[in-house]
Amino acid sequence: MKLILLGPPGSGKSTMSERLTREFKLKHISPGEIFRDEIEKKPQLGREIKKYMEGGGLVPDNLTNEIIKLEVEKQKNFLLDGYPRTIGQAHALDKFAKIDKALLLEISKKIAIERISGRRICSQCETPFHIKFIPPKKTGICDKCKGKLMQRKDDAPASVKKRFQIYNVQVKPLKEFYKKKKLLTLIDASPSPERVYQEIKQIVK
Image 1 (cartoon, one colour):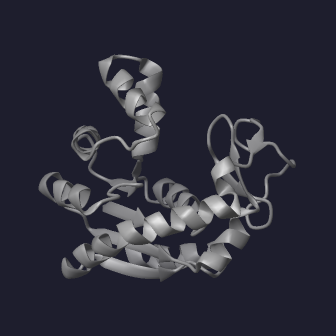
Image 2 (image 1 turned 90 degrees about the vertical axis):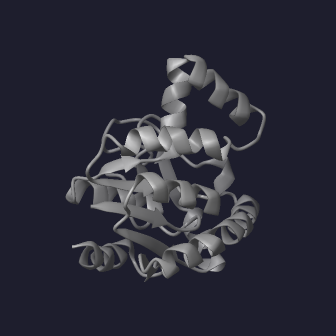
């Protein structure tokens, strides 16, 4: 099974990807995670990625595509999270992987902003939590690694609004691309995470 999971900030994408990869034994592939791993290794590739990220820019499509290609070719079953972000990346992916489904979580900006105020992430293992929907067993502490939970700066309302604008511009061509290929499934992400996951589960079975 080869899946793409798309969704705006606050749609629950991280939560859904974690549950899907665990239950269906899929390899979670995220450019952000790969970039951070390469930077920690500090070889030439890591230094090149760091240069772009520290400069406030995006890692170029050609470099991102090559990194994802190398990772995808190792896996029979995977979930792509955070890729493709552009139509150029979608065309590149089409050349080296046969995707089974593209799932698009949809939610209003208003609901997303309300949700994000309660979102927390582990500072060590990056496991996502929510103080209302997915609370940790111990306040402020990760259930998995006992790391400290934090609220990211870019989860502030003003930042979320800006990210929404960028997301809407990026997702429109991707939506059309996968719709034409008959791979796109739209999912209402406004109900509870459990209801949303059960719907996704029925779709990917």
